[in-house]
Amino acid sequence: MKKGGSIPDEFAHSILSAQRASMMLGVELIEFEEGSASLALKMRDELQQQHQFIHGGILAYLADCALSFAAGSVLGDCITVEFKINYLRPAKGEGRLLARGKVLGHGRTTATVRAEIFVEREDGARELCAAAQGTLQRV
Amino acid sequence: MKKGGSIPDEFAHSILSAQRASMMLGVELIEFEEGSASLALKMRDELQQQHQFIHGGILAYLADCALSFAAGSVLGDCITVEFKINYLRPAKGEGRLLARGKVLGHGRTTATVRAEIFVEREDGARELCAAAQGTLQRV
Amino acid sequence: MKKGGSIPDEFAHSILSAQRASMMLGVELIEFEEGSASLALKMRDELQQQHQFIHGGILAYLADCALSFAAGSVLGDCITVEFKINYLRPAKGEGRLLARGKVLGHGRTTATVRAEIFVEREDGARELCAAAQGTLQRV
Amino acid sequence: MKKGGSIPDEFAHSILSAQRASMMLGVELIEFEEGSASLALKMRDELQQQHQFIHGGILAYLADCALSFAAGSVLGDCITVEFKINYLRPAKGEGRLLARGKVLGHGRTTATVRAEIFVEREDGARELCAAAQGTLQRV
Image 1 (cartoon, chains in turn red, green, purple, orange):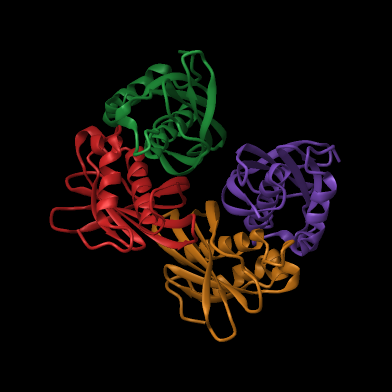
Image 2 (cartoon, rainbow over the protein chains, first blue to last red):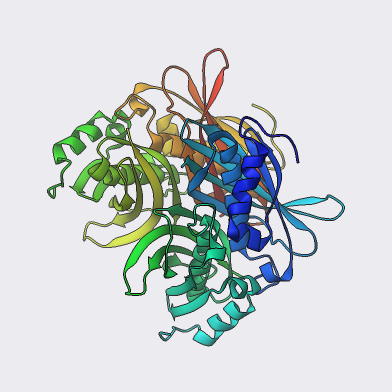
């Protein structure tokens, strides 16, 4: 994992480990830098909806993680105030979901963040599946 | 469960049953009427984030279900184009999450839908935890 | 105009009057109660886009007003943190736009608010044209 | 103005000129390329709210323009289905608003687009004031 900013990587890992829902789903922290964070989730059958695509709610879950860990890199422990997500194409087949959050701007207590969720194949090829934007607040 | 409109309840139940992610999480269909749908999810430890609140991503998942089943009651099988969610208070303690989607308007292929997510206690008391709004499209 | 709550009507009127953009566009305050507010804007040619519908940006402007005045009824002077708007049908023909904001929940400094924008005809008939949801913050 | 893609610049200019609301407000088309578009609006007193900042509704208007012209560069004539906007800092002082829309992805009839709205000073310095994301549809 890449090195973080003033908020240490260990902090981010401890938050993720304390999220029982993220552990159950299998969310992994890939990158945690000042102003951005990336998380991954292996695609598997039990994350699907009725068309064998990854359920939009799972993509929303991962978007929320990417937004909040990116915000957390500048705010520390924080919660999501709101976000929106647009779905661009179905996430299906083999590979993993890769969600990258990036802080657009922040003050002392809140941050505005964007995230993109990609399907990443074994060979490293990526396709954009969803895009999110939201507001996070320091706890 | 209350009776549905022109799209039969059986259809809605078969869609939900075919969503492996919803089955894994334990999402239940409570109501399916023309223009609205309600779904429930029992709150439990493995759905929590680091403050022992239900993870915002789980609330987003359930919001997506409420939006898409409400839309499905007028469109039939459909997918989420986009939605946004605002978090009003943490979902914590004992009870279940209750998400109700309501169609604001629709054409032949798309619907605009709102949803509210409540925490519902054993005694039936409800508190609004999150509110969502989005666009759904017939498959 | 209907009577307001703890925040007086006079306050709301003075805010609107101090908004030069709202005065230029012709926005009127119709109702200001604790937890809700309604504003109106007469439809006219100079608010149109290329299809002779009222420009979506004008509907967004009015939605922002409805959200912020509804929030203002519980928070006092406030600014918009974020909002989203869904367009349901074109606003066209004769009549006025009527936007009603309603507070879903609020704390001491922020409020979550929804708004609906209707076209209202001379005979009082109303059609829903757009729906908005957002976050407002006390200044 | 920079050269456009398969949709000619003339088309974009004719659309903007046919938007009476955009003409009234003074919106200018700065750039129109395949997949992106930039528009500008000179800041002036009559676009302000009660704190002498540019009204959030005006920023939303300009965001809608940036989203729809960017989408228009790949779809042709189109309308906004929905969008959301986050406000990062007040737009105030001298200069102009610069809104740049960029297509994230599109099919034959719809596009997902992001926009950023900057305050641009006389010396070319820019500050990000708002960020938007939305869905556009070909007419």
